Amino acid sequence: MISVFGSTGFIGSKFCDMYPDEIVKVGREDDTPKSSDVLYFISTIHNYNVFDDVHLDINTNLNKLMRVLQNCKNNDMTFNFISSWFVYGKNNILPATEDTHCNPKGFYSITKRTAEQLLISYCETFKIKYRILRLANVYGESDTSVSKQKNALQYLIGEIIDNKDINLYDGGKHIRDFIYVDDVCDAIHACIKKGDINTIINVGSGRPHQFLDLMMYVKDRVGSTSNFIDVHPTEFHNVVQVKNMYLDISTLRQLGFVPKVSIEDGLNIIIDHYKKKRGLK
Image 1 (cartoon, rainbow, N blue to C red):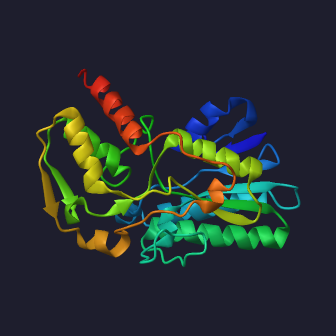
Image 2: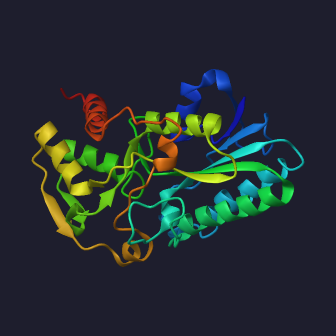
Protein backbone atom coordinates (compact mmCIF):
# COMPACT_ATOMS: atom_id res chain seq x y z
CA MET A 1 0.00 0.00 0.00
CA ILE A 2 1.00 3.61 -0.60
CA SER A 3 0.43 6.20 2.14
CA VAL A 4 -0.71 9.35 0.34
CA PHE A 5 -0.10 12.69 2.03
CA GLY A 6 -2.04 15.46 0.27
CA SER A 7 -4.78 13.18 -1.04
CA THR A 8 -7.30 16.03 -1.36
CA GLY A 9 -5.23 18.19 -3.73
CA PHE A 10 -5.50 18.36 -7.50
CA ILE A 11 -2.93 15.66 -8.38
CA GLY A 12 -3.14 13.71 -5.13
CA SER A 13 -6.90 13.19 -5.40
CA LYS A 14 -6.59 12.10 -9.03
CA PHE A 15 -3.87 9.58 -8.09
CA CYS A 16 -6.11 8.16 -5.38
CA ASP A 17 -9.03 7.92 -7.82
CA MET A 18 -6.88 6.10 -10.38
CA TYR A 19 -5.31 3.63 -7.94
CA PRO A 20 -7.90 3.16 -5.18
CA ASP A 21 -6.84 -0.39 -4.30
CA GLU A 22 -3.20 0.60 -3.79
CA ILE A 23 -3.48 3.64 -1.53
CA VAL A 24 -4.33 4.67 1.99
CA LYS A 25 -5.14 8.32 2.54
CA VAL A 26 -3.38 10.08 5.42
CA GLY A 27 -5.36 12.84 7.14
CA ARG A 28 -4.34 16.47 6.92
CA GLU A 29 -3.26 16.67 10.58
CA ASP A 30 -1.67 13.21 10.67
CA ASP A 31 2.12 13.00 10.39
CA THR A 32 2.45 9.21 10.50
CA PRO A 33 2.66 7.00 7.38
CA LYS A 34 0.40 3.95 7.29
CA SER A 35 2.58 1.80 5.03
CA SER A 36 6.16 1.31 3.88
CA ASP A 37 5.67 3.34 0.68
CA VAL A 38 4.99 7.06 1.11
CA LEU A 39 3.76 9.44 -1.60
CA TYR A 40 4.05 13.05 -0.46
CA PHE A 41 2.13 15.76 -2.35
CA ILE A 42 1.76 18.39 0.39
CA SER A 43 2.95 21.76 -0.90
CA THR A 44 2.11 25.35 -1.67
CA ILE A 45 1.56 26.01 -5.36
CA HIS A 46 3.09 29.33 -6.44
CA ASN A 47 5.56 32.08 -5.58
CA TYR A 48 3.03 34.79 -4.62
CA ASN A 49 2.42 33.82 -0.99
CA VAL A 50 5.22 36.16 0.07
CA PHE A 51 2.80 39.09 -0.31
CA ASP A 52 0.26 37.67 2.14
CA ASP A 53 2.04 35.28 4.50
CA VAL A 54 5.83 35.20 4.54
CA HIS A 55 5.81 31.99 6.60
CA LEU A 56 3.33 29.93 4.54
CA ASP A 57 5.81 28.35 2.11
CA ILE A 58 8.24 27.57 4.92
CA ASN A 59 5.63 26.04 7.21
CA THR A 60 3.95 24.02 4.46
CA ASN A 61 6.91 22.92 2.38
CA LEU A 62 9.51 22.43 5.11
CA ASN A 63 8.15 22.15 8.65
CA LYS A 64 5.35 19.73 7.80
CA LEU A 65 7.72 17.61 5.72
CA MET A 66 10.19 17.29 8.58
CA ARG A 67 7.46 16.24 11.00
CA VAL A 68 6.47 13.43 8.66
CA LEU A 69 10.07 12.40 8.00
CA GLN A 70 10.67 12.05 11.73
CA ASN A 71 8.09 9.27 11.71
CA CYS A 72 9.89 7.44 8.92
CA LYS A 73 13.31 6.90 10.52
CA ASN A 74 14.31 3.46 11.74
CA ASN A 75 11.68 1.95 9.45
CA ASP A 76 12.06 0.19 6.10
CA MET A 77 10.33 2.91 4.07
CA THR A 78 10.56 4.50 0.64
CA PHE A 79 9.64 8.19 0.59
CA ASN A 80 8.39 9.43 -2.81
CA PHE A 81 8.50 13.23 -2.76
CA ILE A 82 6.63 15.31 -5.34
CA SER A 83 8.72 18.30 -6.33
CA SER A 84 8.53 20.79 -9.19
CA TRP A 85 10.38 22.05 -12.25
CA PHE A 86 10.48 25.39 -10.42
CA VAL A 87 13.56 24.16 -8.51
CA TYR A 88 15.66 24.54 -11.68
CA GLY A 89 15.15 28.29 -11.77
CA LYS A 90 16.62 30.30 -14.59
CA ASN A 91 18.69 28.07 -16.86
CA ASN A 92 19.83 28.63 -20.42
CA ILE A 93 20.51 24.97 -21.20
CA LEU A 94 17.33 23.10 -22.14
CA PRO A 95 15.85 20.60 -21.78
CA ALA A 96 16.64 20.46 -18.08
CA THR A 97 18.02 17.11 -16.96
CA GLU A 98 18.00 15.82 -13.42
CA ASP A 99 21.65 16.94 -13.18
CA THR A 100 20.96 20.51 -14.31
CA HIS A 101 22.13 23.10 -11.78
CA CYS A 102 19.28 24.41 -9.64
CA ASN A 103 19.00 28.16 -9.15
CA PRO A 104 15.46 28.79 -7.86
CA LYS A 105 14.00 32.23 -7.19
CA GLY A 106 10.93 32.99 -5.11
CA PHE A 107 9.78 31.50 -1.81
CA TYR A 108 7.86 28.58 -3.32
CA SER A 109 10.70 27.60 -5.63
CA ILE A 110 13.40 27.98 -2.98
CA THR A 111 11.52 26.02 -0.34
CA LYS A 112 10.81 23.19 -2.79
CA ARG A 113 14.54 22.91 -3.54
CA THR A 114 15.36 23.20 0.16
CA ALA A 115 12.83 20.44 0.87
CA GLU A 116 14.64 18.22 -1.61
CA GLN A 117 17.97 18.86 0.07
CA LEU A 118 16.62 18.33 3.58
CA LEU A 119 14.93 15.13 2.43
CA ILE A 120 18.14 13.76 0.92
CA SER A 121 20.19 14.64 3.99
CA TYR A 122 17.66 13.17 6.42
CA CYS A 123 17.18 10.00 4.38
CA GLU A 124 20.93 9.45 4.07
CA THR A 125 21.34 10.00 7.82
CA PHE A 126 18.59 7.58 8.86
CA LYS A 127 18.85 5.10 5.96
CA ILE A 128 15.47 5.90 4.41
CA LYS A 129 15.03 5.18 0.72
CA TYR A 130 13.68 8.04 -1.38
CA ARG A 131 12.71 9.28 -4.82
CA ILE A 132 12.27 12.91 -5.84
CA LEU A 133 9.88 13.48 -8.74
CA ARG A 134 10.10 16.89 -10.41
CA LEU A 135 6.84 17.61 -12.21
CA ALA A 136 6.37 19.80 -15.27
CA ASN A 137 3.25 21.99 -15.65
CA VAL A 138 0.27 19.78 -14.83
CA TYR A 139 -3.23 20.55 -16.11
CA GLY A 140 -6.61 18.83 -16.06
CA GLU A 141 -10.31 19.60 -15.77
CA SER A 142 -10.40 18.47 -12.13
CA ASP A 143 -8.17 21.37 -11.05
CA THR A 144 -10.57 23.70 -9.27
CA SER A 145 -8.02 26.26 -8.04
CA VAL A 146 -6.76 27.75 -11.31
CA SER A 147 -5.77 31.42 -11.32
CA LYS A 148 -3.37 33.81 -13.01
CA GLN A 149 -0.72 32.60 -10.55
CA LYS A 150 -1.48 28.88 -10.62
CA ASN A 151 -2.28 26.93 -13.80
CA ALA A 152 -2.55 30.05 -15.95
CA LEU A 153 -3.11 27.88 -19.02
CA GLN A 154 -6.50 26.71 -17.78
CA TYR A 155 -7.42 30.09 -16.35
CA LEU A 156 -6.82 31.75 -19.72
CA ILE A 157 -8.75 29.07 -21.59
CA GLY A 158 -11.79 30.17 -19.60
CA GLU A 159 -11.08 33.80 -20.40
CA ILE A 160 -10.81 33.01 -24.12
CA ILE A 161 -14.09 31.11 -24.08
CA ASP A 162 -15.62 34.23 -22.52
CA ASN A 163 -14.17 36.33 -25.39
CA LYS A 164 -12.06 38.44 -23.03
CA ASP A 165 -8.86 40.10 -24.18
CA ILE A 166 -5.76 38.36 -22.86
CA ASN A 167 -2.57 40.01 -21.61
CA LEU A 168 0.41 37.79 -22.38
CA TYR A 169 3.83 38.44 -20.89
CA ASP A 170 6.37 38.84 -23.70
CA GLY A 171 3.62 38.12 -26.18
CA GLY A 172 3.31 34.53 -24.96
CA LYS A 173 6.54 33.56 -26.68
CA HIS A 174 7.91 31.63 -23.72
CA ILE A 175 7.94 27.82 -23.75
CA ARG A 176 6.67 25.32 -21.22
CA ASP A 177 6.29 21.57 -20.77
CA PHE A 178 2.62 20.69 -20.18
CA ILE A 179 1.40 17.25 -19.14
CA TYR A 180 -2.15 16.06 -18.49
CA VAL A 181 -2.94 15.02 -14.93
CA ASP A 182 -3.82 11.39 -15.77
CA ASP A 183 -0.45 11.00 -17.48
CA VAL A 184 1.30 12.49 -14.46
CA CYS A 185 -0.38 9.98 -12.15
CA ASP A 186 0.60 7.11 -14.46
CA ALA A 187 4.17 8.38 -14.44
CA ILE A 188 4.26 8.68 -10.64
CA HIS A 189 2.91 5.16 -10.33
CA ALA A 190 5.58 3.85 -12.72
CA CYS A 191 8.31 5.60 -10.71
CA ILE A 192 7.05 4.09 -7.46
CA LYS A 193 6.83 0.60 -8.92
CA LYS A 194 9.91 0.54 -11.16
CA GLY A 195 12.08 3.61 -10.54
CA ASP A 196 15.50 3.42 -8.95
CA ILE A 197 15.67 4.50 -5.32
CA ASN A 198 17.70 7.43 -3.99
CA THR A 199 17.33 9.34 -7.22
CA ILE A 200 15.63 12.29 -8.92
CA ILE A 201 13.29 11.78 -11.89
CA ASN A 202 11.81 14.43 -14.18
CA VAL A 203 8.11 13.92 -14.95
CA GLY A 204 6.73 15.74 -17.97
CA SER A 205 5.87 15.36 -21.63
CA GLY A 206 9.42 16.16 -22.71
CA ARG A 207 8.00 18.44 -25.40
CA PRO A 208 8.34 22.24 -25.48
CA HIS A 209 5.24 24.28 -26.37
CA GLN A 210 5.14 28.00 -27.01
CA PHE A 211 2.41 29.48 -24.87
CA LEU A 212 1.09 31.73 -27.65
CA ASP A 213 0.64 28.74 -29.94
CA LEU A 214 -1.56 27.05 -27.33
CA MET A 215 -3.61 30.21 -26.87
CA MET A 216 -4.10 30.49 -30.63
CA TYR A 217 -5.21 26.85 -30.79
CA VAL A 218 -7.85 27.50 -28.12
CA LYS A 219 -9.03 30.71 -29.78
CA ASP A 220 -9.45 29.00 -33.15
CA ARG A 221 -11.11 25.95 -31.61
CA VAL A 222 -13.82 27.97 -29.84
CA GLY A 223 -14.16 30.79 -32.39
CA SER A 224 -13.30 33.40 -29.77
CA THR A 225 -13.03 37.13 -30.43
CA SER A 226 -10.33 37.53 -27.76
CA ASN A 227 -7.33 39.69 -28.61
CA PHE A 228 -3.86 38.78 -27.37
CA ILE A 229 -2.01 41.78 -25.98
CA ASP A 230 1.75 41.80 -25.61
CA VAL A 231 2.65 43.20 -22.18
CA HIS A 232 5.89 43.49 -20.23
CA PRO A 233 6.21 41.20 -17.20
CA THR A 234 5.95 42.80 -13.80
CA GLU A 235 9.11 43.42 -11.82
CA PHE A 236 8.22 40.61 -9.40
CA HIS A 237 7.60 38.22 -12.29
CA ASN A 238 11.04 39.04 -13.70
CA VAL A 239 12.62 38.36 -10.32
CA VAL A 240 11.06 34.97 -9.54
CA GLN A 241 9.71 33.44 -12.73
CA VAL A 242 11.45 31.50 -15.48
CA LYS A 243 10.90 32.45 -19.12
CA ASN A 244 11.57 29.10 -20.82
CA MET A 245 11.53 25.57 -19.43
CA TYR A 246 10.96 22.02 -20.51
CA LEU A 247 12.23 18.75 -19.11
CA ASP A 248 14.39 15.90 -20.33
CA ILE A 249 12.39 12.77 -19.44
CA SER A 250 14.87 10.14 -20.63
CA THR A 251 14.95 8.51 -17.19
CA LEU A 252 11.16 8.33 -17.09
CA ARG A 253 11.00 6.85 -20.59
CA GLN A 254 13.35 4.09 -19.49
CA LEU A 255 10.59 2.94 -17.14
CA GLY A 256 8.34 2.44 -20.18
CA PHE A 257 6.32 5.60 -19.68
CA VAL A 258 4.77 7.27 -22.72
CA PRO A 259 2.21 10.11 -22.32
CA LYS A 260 -1.20 9.05 -23.62
CA VAL A 261 -2.81 12.49 -23.91
CA SER A 262 -1.43 14.87 -26.54
CA ILE A 263 -1.45 18.59 -25.83
CA GLU A 264 -4.20 19.06 -28.44
CA ASP A 265 -6.38 16.36 -26.90
CA GLY A 266 -5.74 17.76 -23.44
CA LEU A 267 -6.72 21.27 -24.49
CA ASN A 268 -9.88 19.93 -26.08
CA ILE A 269 -10.80 18.20 -22.82
CA ILE A 270 -10.39 21.48 -20.92
CA ILE A 271 -12.29 23.46 -23.54
CA ASP A 272 -15.21 21.04 -23.52
CA HIS A 273 -15.25 21.01 -19.72
CA TYR A 274 -15.39 24.80 -19.46
CA LYS A 275 -17.98 25.12 -22.21
CA LYS A 276 -20.19 22.60 -20.43
CA LYS A 277 -19.87 24.55 -17.18
CA ARG A 278 -20.98 27.69 -19.05
CA GLY A 279 -23.88 25.93 -20.78
CA LEU A 280 -22.26 26.33 -24.20
CA LYS A 281 -22.22 23.91 -27.12
